Image 1 (tube, rainbow, N blue to C red):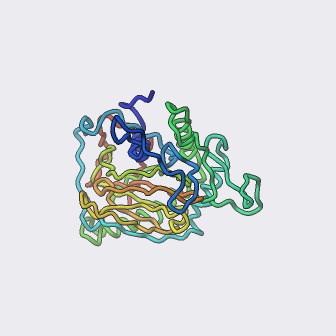
Image 2: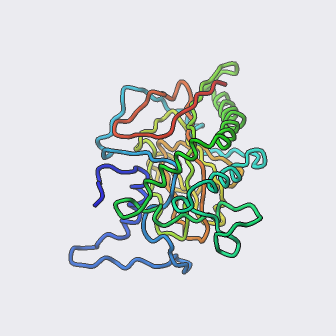
Image 3: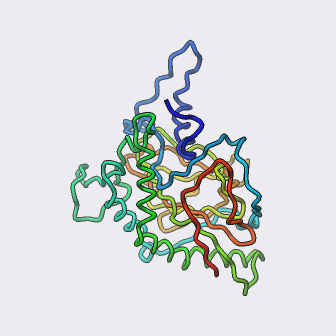
Length: 326
């Protein structure tokens, strides 16, 4: 059986979304019959397991009630900065799609997956593969205790992206040339930084790649990132690599902590969305389409608000931070 006290934090919340549907209504009744197809009648390919394969093996040991923070301090960013904000960028100059295609093509097909050909098979094509046409093996979304390989796949993908210098070079340029300068301008516009002030930023490196194939039952349950050790002095950034219009999958966020007024963010390819994920709960709906949803996400902390020594007892992060001064 599974060890329920130790597991993957994000994997657990995704897996729970399926388990909630599978609960026995009473001890005297059988499990309810789960639908075999999406609301549009497409048969589910991924009937069990978690929703996404991600390049992270972040672990949590304790229940939420027993997670405590060390003596580090963190201060809220100004309210105006915590609101959702879309920033456009050039997909020609910062071609994350192509870099992730190349990364996935170098991965183990049995563990991470393959690109479908136009005729539905996995043969090579003369055209550039599309990320929404990537297929993840079913076992790579299933936990080891259920005879799956998700833990192995997540560690493999995490190691791959952390060692891909071509991808990381593009990511660094994107942060230093687009995201951080604009973030500094926003800090100055709300009076949180002086025009001539040097600001230290701490950005997550590498970012997390999330791959959500379909058609599937599982979804990512609503949560805030403070539950998993993240702090108030940072912003989340969500960068879609595929179209939400094609997959029907999107990030849903509440306007402020506890509001419960979830709305789809609707960010498009060529946009990166920032929001305060440490306090605003968010989730990702199930992928009922035949296509695959992919995105990158990362966090950026700001000096004076973010404490690089922050650590929540009972959690282990597998991504580092890079400090940049602007």
